Length: 226
Length: 233
Image (cartoon, rainbow over all chains, first blue to last red; front, side, top):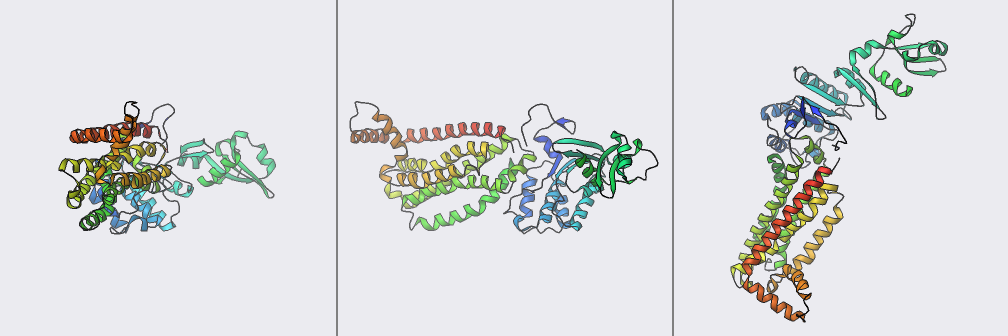
C-alpha cells in the first residue's frame, strides 16, 4: 500500500492497475468488511465491484463454510470471518490469491479445511497463491516455492522440494562441527550434550548421519546463524 | 464505483430511514422552530464522514485498495454520497419549510433562498473535512470533524434560524467587506444597504450560492484526490 520509491511492479505480465485487480483475490489478516452488514449485503457489494463476480459460486462457498446469510459480520468468529474473506476471493475468477496470515488464530480443523481449499485452487494451471505466514507447517503443506524474510533481508527463495533435498539435520560433537566447511553449515546450536546443525548435504562427508529437515527447523537455525 | 456506492447506501439506510418519519411526524408539531430544520443538514452532512471513520475502524479502507477501484474513484464516491445527502437534505428541509414555515416567508423565492443557505453544512463540512481525511486518515481528523459539527450545529444553525434574517449565512462576511469602505459609517446603514441589495437580487444570490458550493466542492475534490494519492498505509 506504499507509494513506490522507484521501479515498477508487473503482475500477471502487466503493469499493475485498478482494472487488473479483478484478477487478484486478497485476504488480509483482518478481513476488513463492514461490520454491520450480513453476507447477502456483502455479496451484493462485491457483485457491483468485481467484473467477473459469480454469485452462485459465492453462495456455494457460504453453504460449504456454513456461513449464515442473515447474521451481521461483526458477530462472526475469527474463523468465520476468514472463511468469508476466502469465499469472496474465490468468487470472482481470480487467477492470483494474495493471502496475509490466513490461518493465524484459527483452530486446527478450520486451518486444515482452508488449506484444502487453497490446494484445490492451485490445481488449475493458471492459478497461483502468494501466501505470507508465520505458521511454517502450513507453508510446508501447500507451497511449491518458499521465501524466508528475516529482519528485512531475503534469507532464501527456493523450491520447497529442493530445500528439503539439499539440507539436512545433524547431531554431532562440537569438534566435528568445527571441522566442516563453513559454507556447509547453514545454522548451528551448541548444547552441553554436543552440537546440532543444519547442513548442506552436498558439502559434508557421507560419514555423517543426516536426517531430513523440516522447513521450520531450517528457518529457525538460519535465523539464529544470522 | 457502483460497489462502493452500494456499500455506503447499505450503511446509510438505517440512519436516513429514521430521519424521514421523524421529519414527517415533527413537521406539524415542533418544526415550526427553524433551528430543528437546519439541524437536518448538519445531521446528514456528518453521516458520510462517519462512514469514512467507520471504514478505517473496520479496515475497509485497506480492503478497498485491493479491489478494482482507482484512488480517484474512491474519493469521488464519497463526494457523490455527500452530494446525494445535500440533495436529500434540500428535499427534507424544503418539505419542512413548505409545511411548517410557509407563513414566515414573503414569497417562494425567499423560502428557496433560505433552503439554499440551510443546506450549507452538507456542502461545506465534507468540502473542508475530506481533503484532510483522505490525506491523513479520518480518525486522526476527529477533532476537526467535531469542531465542524459544533460550529454548524450550534453557530450556523442558530444564526440561520431567524427567518427575519434569512440571508444571515451570507450576511456577516459581506458586512465585514462593506465595513472596509470608509464612506459607510454605521452598522445600521450597512444592514439597510445590504437588505436593499438582497431584496432586488434574491434569485441571483441563490445562483451565486450554488455556484460557490460547486467551486468549493470541485476545489476540495481536487485536493482530496491529490492528498489520497500521496497517502501510504
